[in-house]
Length: 226
Ligand code: SF4
Ligand code: FES
Image (tube, rainbow, N blue to C red):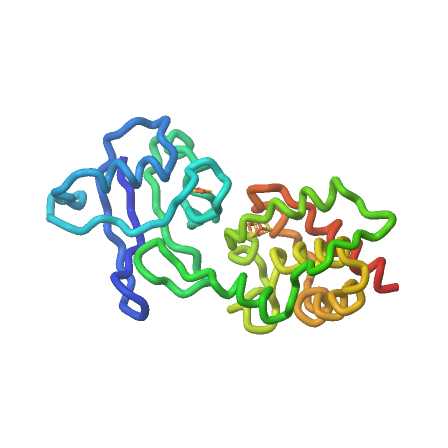
């Protein structure tokens, strides 16, 4: 199977496509496939020319850490939860997430997700749940991997400088519902960086590997606002 990867040697350098011949098992995940291609000491491209290992990130290999988020045949997804057999007869083209600066090949810098939360002070502090706290919703929202897939598909998210996206909105919901003394301040921050600009495409919910109910988080924060 032909596997093409949009590569970039270092931040700011020109990206270029490079293709490889994959002859490993179809039951491999895309993460396993990248590992397979990278395994040999003498890595060659599809034409037999020597090349370098493909740069990509992983940690858990079971859909828990979010590190392996990339765009696979046009669809943003976790590489460890996408399987080679889905592309039988088609080939696979992989590129890095586009909404984040590329560090190397498929490795991107997603630190803005955490930095925005830190700068906006979206942290729980003292645990003080509202009397009507919905624990099932809190549990679901807390599963966010900070993988960035929701930001990749969001029509309003550009570079994370003003509009912070679904991952931010869900953390705002979590803090507002777990610390009622902070809820008013968090609702204001949420409105400034998400609520007032979201166009409700809800593409974030479709792509989210953890199926986080972002719409319910939005409804909760908007309902409390009134
Ligand atoms: S909300 Fe979902 S898609 Fe977005 S960062 Fe969290 S886990 Fe990833
Ligand atoms: S390696 Fe952790 S989610 Fe894919």
